[in-house]
Image (cartoon, rainbow, N blue to C red; front, side, top):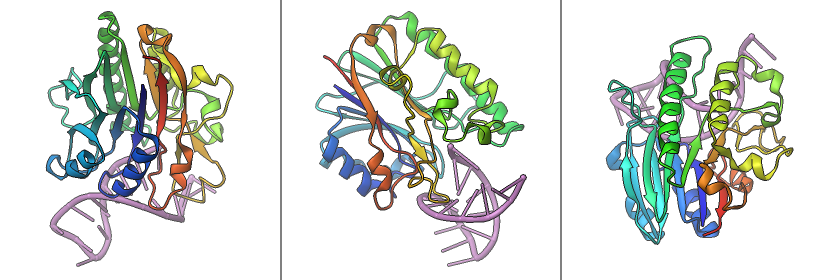
Length: 257
DNA sequence: ATGGCTAATTGGATTAGA
């Protein structure tokens, strides 16, 4: 079973690229982030015609998350991250596919540091850690996939010094991510390639993709019941080189069934 | 340090992304 995550940076602007990638790689489940579309502007018909069902939570202008599935249906379990009734940003959706529960997340960017956006990032992260701990306690095979907006270590940035005071690399941010791993979540891509430079994002500026000036900020975490089923994984980095591409590339893993 | 690029909005510039 192949599970992928892809920050599309605008589902409608990205539709041709998304459909091309789906037809070439046929993942079973796809978590999407940054739809940048209101609920009623999600291109459901085109996704259905491509052979996928979808659940999504849209929002005007910003954010927005979706899960696509091939074959079997998704059983939605929640579309809000618990812990703050005032939070109206669309950043979390969760569903079960066959025997696996999947949480699709778009963690706040948090820049600039310091400031209210960074504070919001840490508060959201706290709520997410609480929820992730509750998910582990159920022992249900679970995946947390999405754009974490976290550079976990020096190995995950082309030039770590440049990111020292950035919200993606601040010590508070890295510590929060590390606490997920300490609790038992497995960083699947890093597990498969412990010492390799792997990036999932290259900014639009200064020819970053061709210089391979990238970051690894999109992650797929596995709960302990799934760790033995991890077969392979990678980043479809060539998609970043396509016409009208997102600044992120799709990241995927293969699980044995 | 800054600016570079892209997408969405009811616009003709601004905001956000990372």
